[in-house]
Amino acid sequence: MPAPITHPKIEDVPLAAVLHALSDPVRLSIVALAAEEDGLPCRAFETAIPKSTMSHHWRILREAGIIRQEGRGTSRINSLRREELDARFPGLLGNVLEQYRRESP
Amino acid sequence: MPAPITHPKIEDVPLAAVLHALSDPVRLSIVALAAEEDGLPCRAFETAIPKSTMSHHWRILREAGIIRQEGRGTSRINSLRREELDARFPGLLGNVLEQYRRESP
DNA sequence: GCATTAGTTCGAAAAATCCGTACAAACGAA
DNA sequence: TTCGTTTGTACGGATTTTTCGAACTAATGC
Image (cartoon, rainbow over all chains, first blue to last red; front, side):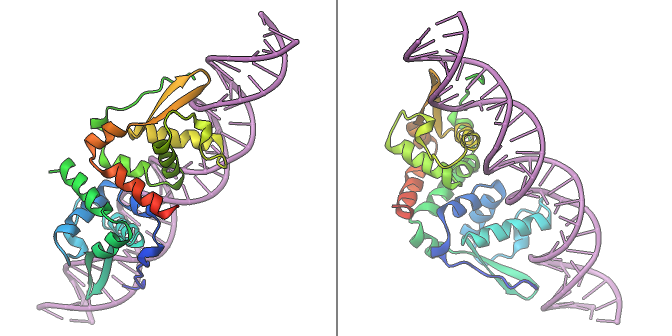
């Protein structure tokens, strides 16, 4: 994929950016699935939404330091930046995931 | 003030709405101050930002069930809906406030 | 070579945000 | 009561963000 995928240093990510990234139902569902299963490609998420919109959501999550993407062939491997995020915002992601699971069982 | 101020039932508020309300630096600072001191009027918050913009932020916070406003004379009394929020999203607000204080000391 | 698949980019429409201006309501003082 | 002040909302337009179809690129397979 042409655009060189870049990931921010976690210490450069403001709290508001993380909360913003998590403030969308589609992105929440992405994060919840990524938390359960590591290394999934983009196509494994949220089939009902157009690819271009999903691409936008991935970018928001990437730029908020929440998800890491590595190109593998024609697809991407997605993973949560769990440890980094926990170091920077202790307990935040875990708590949000807990709320999410409570809300959508 | 003309518009009848309404507050949502806390169980009707989606997680994404709460995170969205908290995903703005100005609103975060409002919530942080409201958490420290109860019953402050709107004018006590964020003097540098235009009144009309602040009014918008208050509305977002109100509609997310985060803040309760009661008209008192020409001003409003603002308070966090702490207990209700903690019942619906246990630990979430406290965690976000913790991150906020860590980030802006 | 050609077709398929995975995901990005472009461009335009729709929605949200920001902010100046005008406004309404409550209050105090004359 | 009437005038001026204070507190916050409503309106309208400019800017920004979000959404999504269509075109595109790159890797893979036949």
